[in-house]
Image (cartoon, rainbow, N blue to C red; front, side):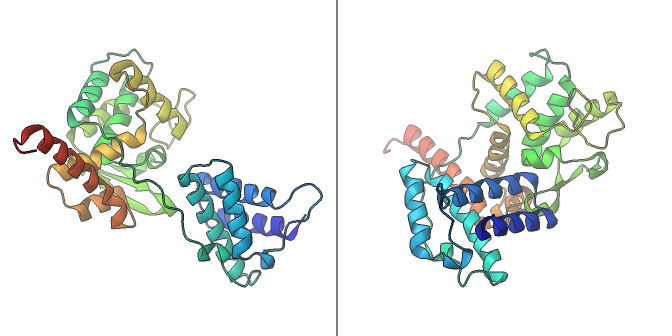
Length: 296
């Protein structure tokens, strides 16, 4: 085993000890294994961590561009490498964090596609009316109402346990990125849907949302549920759990909520992440202006 491979293994073990999410660990491991493979062609020992400099990292970046990877993917891989080299520098195995010396590739500014209020309500009302035959309609409706009513990430939703719910005060405790906990409120419709689901739920499992085998529902399971309803009822297979998060933030902003409050509700560490919803609202306003103003 090469020294580079050994240190990647140590880094992954540290992530696990620090309770990084499974998704995060797998993503880092995949990106760093690809980095290792690039510098480990057949019969060649990869450089030791201390031998990496800006030129070597730039060579690797050029190879990623040659593979026609998207800018988003390249940015993610570079970010993973920077965190790994920060670990190496701290362990005194590399003299400098070489990836930090390279400029992050700029990606195109893409605004999230957002459902209108009417589209979101039509979808939720259709699920509530039982327009699609499903084995667990009360569970499905509670999932959609909480996604739209709380703006939580799908990973946060499936991680909710029964004791994370304050049904009286209508608060939900969720665990976001980096295992950070926050409380988010939910409204009347979400509360009603949740009560209907809990009334028919008989399992002793602590997870709030269960799959057909009685175990915790996964991210993938929720994505499948959303896709099925969106396809059959809205004719749009592109809708996913994050679509409801985008809609939650955009509709709050359109109705006058301030950006700081939305930042807290979404669990964003940086206000700049939340500000993309301002861009969406401005885009909508411009569309209204172009349609309605006589001088547009």
